[in-house]
Image (cartoon, rainbow, N blue to C red; front, side, top):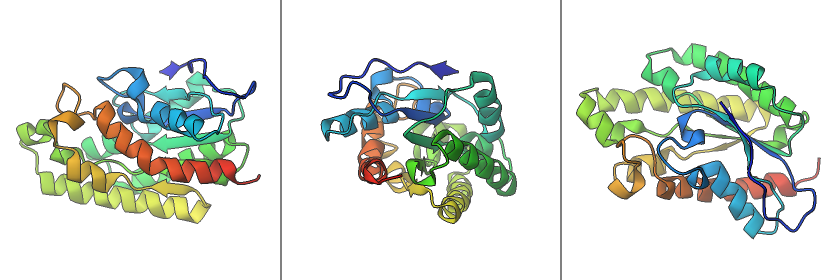
Length: 218
């Protein structure tokens, strides 16, 4: 699925371009598109005086790493972008796929993201996978919540290492997802996906990182 960005309200006639890649956590399953974390991030950056357009989004609920890769091929986003974000992997874990498979495919997606950023790894940021095991959906499902947490810790550790090896920023939103992800106001109506209020927490953590990346030369 590819969503075209809304017309940004910026002071710059040619705003910076932003590509957001991911799954339900990027598309904002169950909430209005204005509440998506990449949209909130772009809005916060504009408030800081950085003329960044709302993101072009390539994301859909349920996508795994390989499905996102195929969807990028199908969407054929225009090149290049000034900022690229990536949040993917929860559906790999949910379907019981291995960390090793995730790491190989995640690395390929990091390479693609860097390509869309004009070869600039310093214009790419990745977010950690949140812990859905704290949600009412997980509790009602009867799945082992400790096992979910262990799995996601392993996935996120692999993602963080892959980002570090490539000079890509990694924003760890997993702790706030565990601390507050079970609160009703932090959840969409399905009791699984985040609300705009939770996405605001993620955007808050990503904001200083994105500001630094966009302020750097090259």
